[in-house]
Length: 188
Image (cartoon, rainbow, N blue to C red; front, side):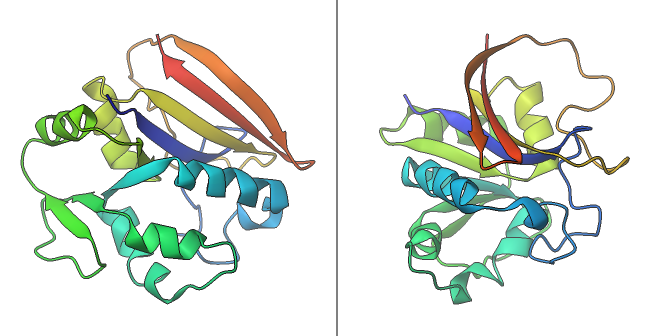
């Protein structure tokens, strides 16, 4: 059985969205000043262990116009472009990014079916609304949080006010360069 893994960039105060808006590729984003070679290697390994992406509508709309035109020496862009992408949306009618499929109905059922298939990890990048829904249905097996040394004060957090108490098991921690800590937690 596959694992459903959520991978998020987070500030010290738990914010997971770009305070500047939706465009995660803006240089004003709080993540980019801390990006380093160790983060690049971590994200490449993470993607290499993945054979399906699940994205919320907003994250899909950020990624779809950008990734098809990205080229890099590592092969990261080629991999992300080739992977099957399942997009959860009630408003999108069609998807332009290759290998993208729409999930409009029962999210829990669709994700449970994907988890039952043979293969590598199923990865969710960003997608805070979707992550909240998946968390509420206990579908997330692992959280990978890259904590950045910055406080932004407001924005969407990984776990919202009003969430019920949950306990997690720390699976690993790793310093990435001199600034970012990668924490991996599994649901107990």
